[in-house]
Length: 322
Image (cartoon, rainbow, N blue to C red; front, side, top):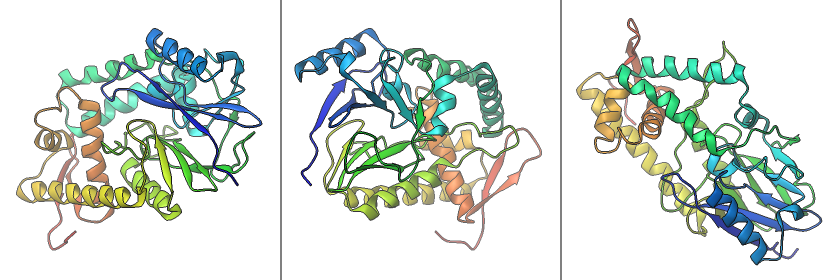
């Protein structure tokens, strides 16, 4: 089978990550993979890029979202006549009904308490919701799950790749090409972000552990090329994945060494790991820190030493080595 033609359309975003890549696939269906943010600049650039390759917005038959973050899923309402595909675990962020948003706020309020955040930082909950202002509200028309074939496109299938977000998917072509969303980015590590649980009495997901497994799934495919959501196209993905997994384990080892010196909360560790940027990027740095804690807990390297107050204090286990 011939390699499919993949049109990369690069769209500006208002976020620190910079430009986002969307992708157009043309076969029996005309499919846009991710949309970019719902900003005037983003929408105008996307229309211009489509025009440059001979397409109008109304030519798009279907939208496939790799995940629900606003830099990728902003313009779902703009393409209202196109069929929308996403993973079922993305639906709550795509729709954002009152019930979910109330749970969203409650979860992060409790999470911040357990992390030991000083109260002035709780304003982050509102700042997190502000980013959703560049994202439409539209439910998926159909869900995609692991192993599903991509409608209208021969040779493509879906791989669940949770971690960076819940409901993250990648598209795998039988020739070894991958459209990976934010699963693997060359110039930065893709941050596994903390999200609310899927029910009031359910535990929250453990995104760092999910992300590591998703990277291993991708490496096992030995992809020829990965088209990412940001940055340059990736060849030799297996080597980059190995590097990322090694660095993550090294970061976890450093976190354990800090806890061997002194018991600490997640926030205290965050300020030590990211002293220059935690105030500006608190959501990302907290997720990164909690991810290392989750990893170390799963490995039996640390434990919660004190849960008597609202904040959880962690300590290293003695006699255990990474």
